[in-house]
Image (cartoon, rainbow over all chains, first blue to last red; front, side, top):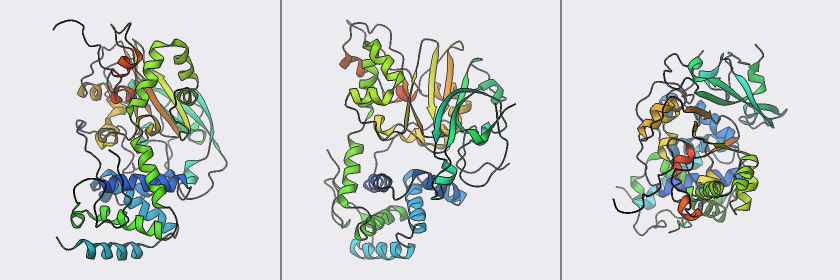
Length: 102
Length: 84
Length: 219
């Protein structure tokens, strides 16, 4: 039987890193958007979990906690046809123009 | 009760480490919408009974040395449990 | 200090006093700003909806849980109510636990400790404690809390003799668990407010006991 990448109980693992980081603005925003969409019943927590579980395993392991949330939001909201990935790409490109090159 | 040792596709909330293991029903939590259905945008019906199932740690893990009385509790849906 | 992310154009400042170099944001960080703008443009949610959630989470902290625990320590009848119907007990103390589907309080005793984990994701009693700490969400905690709870507790500075039973709860469904830690010895006569200061977030997840009473007199 295969163990999926989110199903971590009992795996050999190292010490628990107790350091804590203050949330960045974009993480606070991801958290708030997730909660707002849930409160309005646009999406369910169960759908977000399923999206994380179905992601590519290497991507799952390499993303940070809120990055995984954002990736799942994108999957679930495009699945529900609220917007498309192309619309997000275009909006990011617009922002990048405003923000300027590094 | 034994936790079913099956492998099913989809969104499952029964952890890998507890499948096939034997424990006892500590508490009946009542009926809840089925997360396996909700995860795909469906209505989660029919509701499933959720149980608090207890296990002896030393029976679950081969290397569990400390605390002979230590226990592990998992919230498991009825359709993942079978009588011995 | 409250966080105000109401500026729809993220090229301007966020709620802090320094400008944010947006072009340095990671791939996903940029996308959440785009997602916000699209959701608002399409009328799915409003900026006010988002700000309300930010404010809600900022008002939530382990101080809520500490008040519940301190009250339970000084008032046995409240403790009984807290164990029997935690949501109602929260309402008594003006703590809004309504968004928790099902809430269970686990009482520690001299011979029993509880530890809470969500191995499958990171379920946590957010309305009571606020957001979970990074360590609770970490792969190492999610892996080891179930098969090495005493090892994890030792890393947090908590040793336990073998004759104290440890019970781990893996919250795999809609039940949210809060540990009611053991009242430290030598705290008789302390006020509820003083007692609440001993109740740390980590003691309500169960990795450690509460802080010990401050010794009186010189040291």
